[in-house]
Length: 87
Image (cartoon, rainbow, N blue to C red; front, side):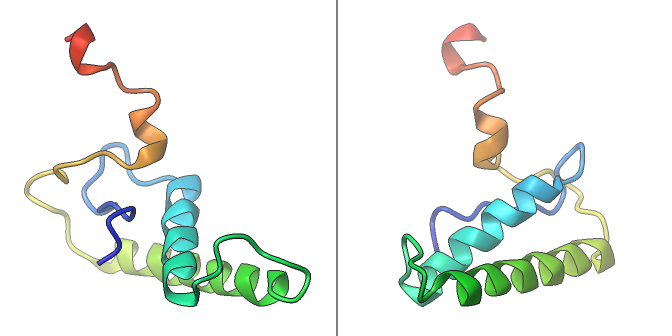
């Protein structure tokens, strides 16, 4: 499992399009081995990200609600969350 991909199911508010795309991008980077695209890989890479994001959106919409929220916040939410020192 790619450690950079966090659980999106059960977030409140629900996972945003940006969070789903970020997770899809991390997944495609991991399985393809492409860390930065070139003119030879960009089209295939971006198509894969779009397909994975769409499949993820469909999956999250079709799963039942979680009883508990995920244990970690997605990276895009960590930036805006108060730090441990602020608590």
